[in-house]
Structure formats: C-alpha cells, structure tokens
Length: 121
Image (cartoon, rainbow, N blue to C red; front, side, top):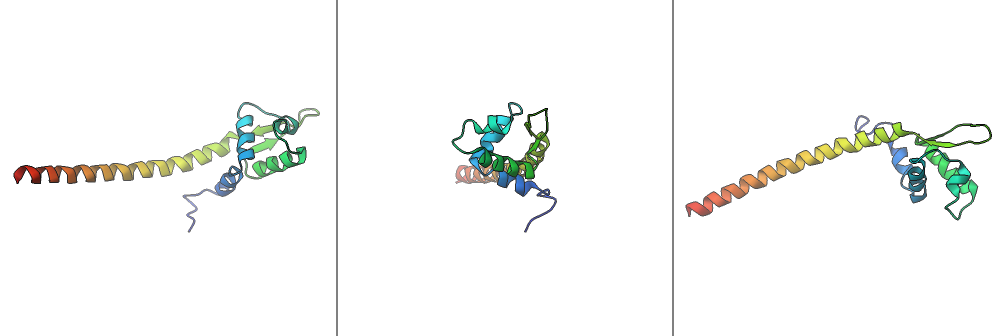
C-alpha cells in the first residue's frame, strides 16, 4: 500500500529513471554543468538517439530540463528533484536510527539485568 504522504507524487518515476546506470552516469556528468546531447553521448558507444531517449526519461521524471541557447540545446540538471528524494530518504533514515536507538537501549537494559543477576548469584 502506498502512502501519499510518505511518497510524494513523481518519486517513483525519479527512482525508476535513476535505476539505469547510464542515466545515473548522465546525471553525474550534468552535476558538473550543462551539456548538449552530443557531449553527453561522447563517452558511450551508443547512438545520439539512444542518449536522447535516456535524457527523455530523465526529463519526464523531472530530473533534467532542456533549453535553447542559440543553436545549442543544453541539458540542465534540476536540483529540486534531488531535494525531494533527499527529504524522502532522510525521513526513513531518521526512523531507522530511532529504531536502532531503542534496540540499543533495550539490549543495554537486558545486559545490565544479566550482569546484576550474575553478581547476586
């Protein structure tokens, strides 16, 4: 069951888009600055069309945008989408840490009880 509050709209698309290693690599490249499709395709042994499809998936997930700069159409990384992911991940990280703190406290109490029982025997 999906909790709308726990998983904001579009978050599944973002994670699905980032599931592909080529798209993660493109995102990492765009973190250093805007680039054209040709510049993004250069390190890969694939067609410009294949890279364009990867960019389209990233664009549909809200991770990148494309603009027009004279004849260039640079691809730009949208940091806001990563803010959304970070907030979602951080929420569950805090909850997990709280569970571990409670478990640590329980184990410490049990160890103390066992030590007291051993001392009194």
